[in-house]
Length: 308
Image (cartoon, rainbow, N blue to C red; front, side, top):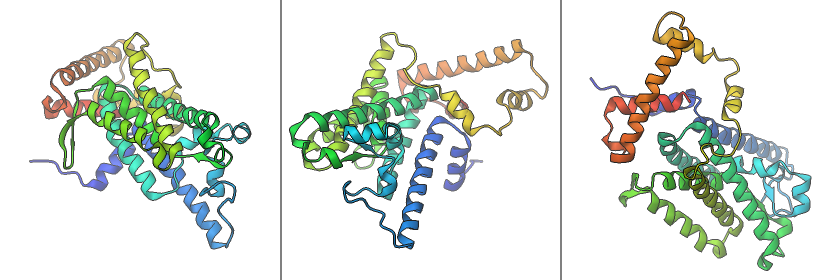
């Protein structure tokens, strides 16, 4: 008998997992809803929501999007982080979250949640740096630097996609109309599109994307050369903010798996045995691809990735 899970149940299960990927998507969605609810409030009370000096930006976005003007940046330094979680348009956030989910799921098949969060944050910071520097050094942007801002998760998302394409370049994905394609070719095409689109509209966005892509590539190359931990923040500290009221993971583990308390030796032994199985599965993926896994191996890998 096959088990069928409805799309709604699948979505609920994904967000209940409290994985890094689900929390990153959730943060983006919550900020998107807050921005648009505030904008709706402005509209209902016939208050002007737009800013005349920042083209196309609402008053809320003004405080969250990263500006290219250095004076504004010094007044709002937090924007180098908040911009990467800020989207106003429905299709903007829809596309970004779809690509984040797609790339993030592949990323966590090979690397852990901490590396995913660090790639997202540092990729976004690299994108902001490329945007700010470009608008302040290239003459073509001299008239726009005062009123330009960047927003959206695209630089962070592309950093994740390029990072995993660099780590597992021959991993094959299925794309509608194109069929099965190696991940490295998908990443290369996306980077080329951004590069060739700089002078065709939204130059700041495309430049930021390239910054994120460069970080994604560089971080994996550094990792392979001996930097065993991606530079960044403590993911577990962030996760604890969302699990404050949860029952401790250690206690859940004891109840579900044994029914009685475990001492440290027993707990570490069981954990080591499980990690050994995960390592074998990851090695199998690197040699034969994800599709070579059995159903049980896929379930074990998915379960482990959601508990990190």
